Each structure stands twice: as structure tokens, then as C-alpha cells.
Image (cartoon, chains in turn brown, purple):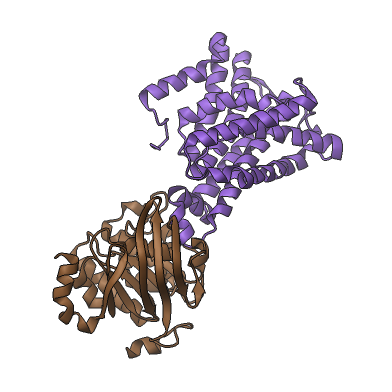
Length: 248
Length: 287
């Protein structure tokens, strides 16, 4: 991946350096034990996809990394720093950003306010002009109420607002869910473009046909554990297994 | 006619206090999900704070307008850090009981030391006297209270609805978890918001000191009506609580002129009517 090397940001010196290292991660929602020892790594500049059925613990994994879950144990190291006991605002300030599954667009804010809401945590984020170049639709709707946008536009807004902040590690939770094919394609282009710019992306997807167009590697999650992992190049060879895992 | 205008003015003055107090309650409820029953006691503390500043420190009314909200606001923030923050995620009832308890303790302490009768607080020299408007005589201080309260209410509305800081506040009211995950220190914002709401109550207390005297139970009497105002206006809206506050003050004033016997109950009758027709209040959203 030469483009990653050339566009690498500070702290992402080489494409092979581990940026996120999750070991034995366990999480609880109140009384229910969701993650039972997740183990996986993400390297700088990679797009890594978590695959798995509904309820396998993919979203919970992202939330656990972000620190927005009731209780978590184990180890989450980001650039060598331990996150497991950090509050989510401090985790965000290290340069990790989450685009949640439900998108989290604020109804009481207009599009511009939604876009400008996440504070800039480090230098090197996209400028507004670069964001409007990626998502021209948003520029025309700046004054609209956030939740008046279409589903696709809301998804673009949810991604766009975390690109401004300078976070270099993005977690996207099912960005294509419920969207029209043409918009899925646009989001695919965006992810490819971000990867080129040196962002590291941890993606949760049900739609592995979409994932296969952007991902470098996959992990398969079941019952709150990683049960398999392979590179995109080995996708074809793993297709049968994958069908069994995902039940499709 | 003179009497009607006079009652209208009294209504506007009461409306100013209703608006300042219900505005603070709305801001606090939005962010902390707490029905702040201590609001009346904090309003009273604002008035006492002005009284102490003047009589112990020789600090005049104008400085008290600035300092009392800050001092009482800091007291509020300490309350939030030490007590209220532990209520996060619990039922509304806990917040109501805790703040009601705080109100009783604070009012009890002040009553213990200052009794129930009022302490005088003089109208500042610059605002003494009155103006003859032709159709009525306007005491300058009363006109000042109405105008200044309106300005403060609109400034608060502007802060919340039109600024970047306000955008954080509105967003955190909707989804504090996500706002925090963007890197905003939401717990600190919650503390400051409580301080802002309390500061507005204390400001109302200072404004009322020259009109109503300074009494330990001045807030207890007022807060019941203010809660009715909040129920009528709905908890969700900033502008709604300002308009409802002023409007109900005026309605109360008009009732005093046309049917004085009902003047103490008209707000509650309206509350019942609103609850029957629109339980979330005139401008409120469903919880």
C-alpha cells in the first residue's frame, strides 16, 4: 500500500505498526455480559472490518473502545496508551472518533452546528472546503435542521463531522445500513479516499460485499469473541466459512 | 383605569420573576434532568447575598447584581458536584426529593438566624422616584426590573439557541454520551449549566429585594407559582418559558383587577386546563 506510506501522518510512520491493540476485552451492559474476551489489532493506515451476525458484539466493541459502555475490563491500547480506565472525552482527545450506528444527528442543531459540534482534538483534520468537496450535498443544506436530512445525508453528516476534528482513527458503525446503492457507493469512495489520506478505519459491517471493496483485513465476531480473521486477499478462499459464520 | 395599569405593571413585575426562574428551571431540567425544587431557596439566597454585600461589605446594588449571581451560582455548582451529580440515571423523583430537602434545610437555616419577617433593602438612588407617563405613574425601579429581566432572558435565549456554546448545551441535552465521546467534558458542562440556572434565580432574588424585602421564605411562596408556570409552558423550551412567565404574570395582574378573589388561583386553574388539553405544556415536548 504505497499510498499509505506517502500520506502517512505523524504517529503512523509505517503501515505495519500496530495502532490499536485489543486484548481480552470484556464488556457489560448492566447485568448482561456482551464481550467475552475480544482480541484483535489494527495497524496504522489500515481499514479493518468486524463482521458478524446481529448481536455478536460488534457495536459493543466500538463502544468499549470509545469508553461509552457501563463496565469494561481487559486491555485496549491505542498508540501504546491504555484506554481501559479513561473517560470517553479523554479517549476522543487522543484522536479516536466514532460514527455511531444510529448516526447521532442532533435534532435541535442545524446542519452547520452538527458539523461544527465535535471539537478539534488535534491538528491535521479536513478543512470545511475539503469536507464539502467530499460531500457536496451538505453544503447546500447547512441551514436545515439536522434530522430533516435524508438518511444518506445524515450518514454523510455523521462521517463529515468527525473528519474535521483531526482524529486519525475512525470507527464507523454500519455506515451503509438502510441506504440506497448509489449512496453506499459514495460512502465506499469516501472510505477509500480517507484511507488514501492516511486515516485508520475500524469498520463494522453486515454487508461484506460492501466491506470487500474497502477492507484490508477482516475479523469475524461471534458471541462477543473474535473467532476468525483473514486478509482481503484471502476473502475468496474463506467464502464458504464466512457464509457459515454469517448464516447467509 | 389607573388601577388597571397599576395591576398590569405588578403583573409584569411578577412575570419577570416567573420568567427568570422558570427559564433557569428549564435549562437545569434539560441538562441535568432534575426538577430543581431548591430554586426558590436559591432565589432567596440571591436576595440575602445582596443584603449581606450591602450591610456587611458596603457593596452597592449594582455590584450585587453582578456578584450575587456569581456567589450563589458557585454555591449551586458545589451542590451539583457534591450531591446532585450522584443522581445521574436515577428516577426524577430522587432529584425532586433531594432538592426539596436542600430547600428546606437552606430556608430553615435562614429562618433560624433571621426570623420570618422581612429585612429592608433600599432602592438604589439612581432608580428612585417615578415617571408620569400621562396615563399612569411608573415607579422607575419597577420599570427597570421589567426591562432588565427581559434583556437577561433574551440574552440567555441567544446564548443557548444561537451560539456555539449553546449548541454544545443543546446537543448534550439530547445525547450527552455522544457529545462526551466527541471530546467534550460533559460533566463540567453540567456543573456550569446548573451554575447558570442558579445564577438566574439569584439575579431574580437581587432584583426583588427592594420590592418585596428580603425574607427567608420569599422563595418558598414564589416557587409554587413558578412550577405551575413551568407546567403550563412546558419544560422543553427556552423561549416558551420566557413567554409563559411574562404572560402568566400579566394574566394574574388582570385577574387582580377584574376579579380579585381569583387572583391567587388563576395560574393553577390555567395549569389544570393545560394539563387536561395538552399534558406536555404549551411548548413542551414529550419527555
